[in-house]
Amino acid sequence: MRRWLLNLVKCETILIVAAILAIVSCFFVPPDSHYLSYIHTNTIAQLIGLMMVVCGFQRIGVFRSIGSRLLRHVKTERGLVIVLMSLTFFSSMFITNDVALVTFVPFAISVLVMANAEKHAILVITLMTIGANVGSMFTPIGNAHNLYLTALTKKSAGEFISIMAPYTITSALLMIVFAFVFFKSTNVKEFSGLHSDDIEQGVLAPSQGKPKPDEIRLMGYGAGFSKWRVLVYCALFAICLCGVAGWIPDWAMILIIVIAFIIFDRHVFRSLDWALPLTFIMFFIFIGNMRRVPGFTELAQMWVGTHPMEVSIASSQFISNVPTTILLSGFCDKWNQLIIGTNLGGMGTLIASMASLISYKGITHKYPHNKGRYLLMYTLVNLLFLAVLVTLAWIIEK
Image 1: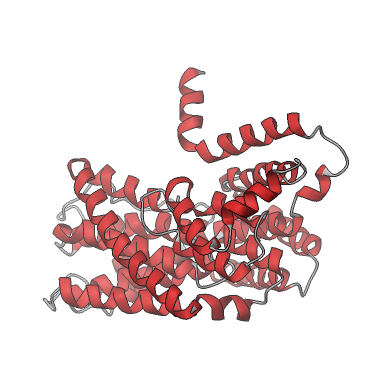
Image 2: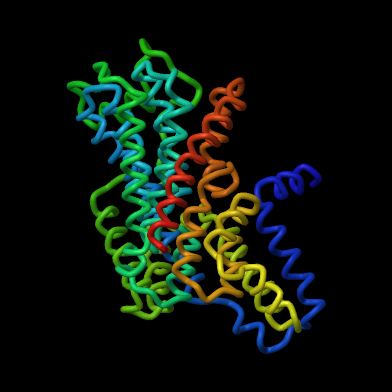
């Protein structure tokens, strides 16, 4: 029991903190009928729907299959790095940054081993993590907090993308610069002439004559890959997008998705990270109560002040950008600055975006003696990206 509790605290720290804050706030504002209005049901419904569909794609191995197909075209070390960065950068726009990193960081480590390029693992995983964080900030569905801000502000997808486009494009250019400066055009022969299925098998389960690092194994995809499943899940993803855009009611979106997964893959319900929507609910209760405490709203608004972008960036460095978004949104009406600040705030420290911890765990599990080196590399490169993007934000705002 003690071990279970310790593991729970370690894995779900933010949820526990949010729950404590919600419970404490209930002593200031006893539960009443207004509590129901606290919960942003649109955000919760859309979040759960997207999580289910993405989990379905994961369980049939679609994302790794795409990565294997792209590797067929790799000719050089630099090209390999660009492909790996692109996998997290573009996929995170649609499947969120944490799912992109869960999927592609172990895959990338295996690929680097196969290509005899392990010496670059720390920088490559750092750039892939940045790619996931800056790619996910481009779309309303790339981050859980973007989904919330889009629903809260009633901004269209086009409006949201136009706000974040300069920062995502600048980040992409910086990543390409890193690829050309730090990686050579040395030939990579390991993937030439292979079919994508051969690469998938070769990277994850090499033949007996090849080295077998601990993490290289054939993935036991939960539902089995098949074209009809891909088509069904693509249709469900389109339904999610219609829900986010407001073209269909959220209840209809959730109903269709739940019925579909009951029929096609009910194990998805056990695989979901239910802690995320629960965390949102706890923060909604806390903010809803504190807004009813006399004097607190005025104090919070003074704290956010006229610089919500800078405050959200600074706050994210210590409590990460998702809690920062929910906390500050209750006391801010400068939505564009909050959107920019909470997204840029995902860079900097390791906990600025909780998704970054996925990469840290992956790289340090494989190379435990390089924890300090990875943390230093990650922090320096992230601070460089953050400095460039904040400067760009100041220029655009002025």
